[in-house]
Length: 220
Image (cartoon, rainbow, N blue to C red; front, side, top):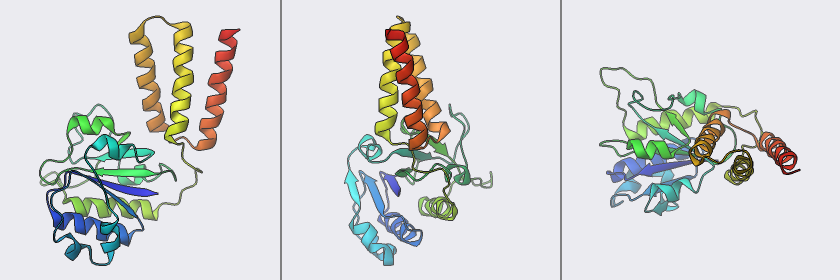
């Protein structure tokens, strides 16, 4: 399942255009974070008016991210980021879990902090003379790539399963390490591995069993 998370949209027309684009490519859930007034959006939505009417409105990005399994931040400026920016075709191989495409404000996009809260970062290759795409255009390109992809990896690992693995890892960390900063670094790295590995539910189940076996041995 694909959701589009539009953060603080400034134009009702762009919201409507994104709803229309979502209808084109079979994406159903539009999540709006602190949107502008939406009067007139239905004119641009056309046959995507049902997507617009069913849009979920939340007041923070964190609440929106909690509604998906894997979040993908979009940015026109990939340089200077702590993580490698992926292309839409790369990200389209994430899997069949609930994926949220996070699109920023028309005027200034997503903040560095908002990008950091997301699991993956994605940018679209464009001319360096003018690299910034309209929000609706960017959304169409991304959803097209997802629509064209054939998922082969099985059901994507859920957030609940990731938390269960992290809980086992914290227990192991407490058994082998006293320094809190070391344990914090291990957890950060493991979360980044989750984001890059695109684990399936079956792979995560095997990994959970592995960590539990380690914990039993250490407890013995």
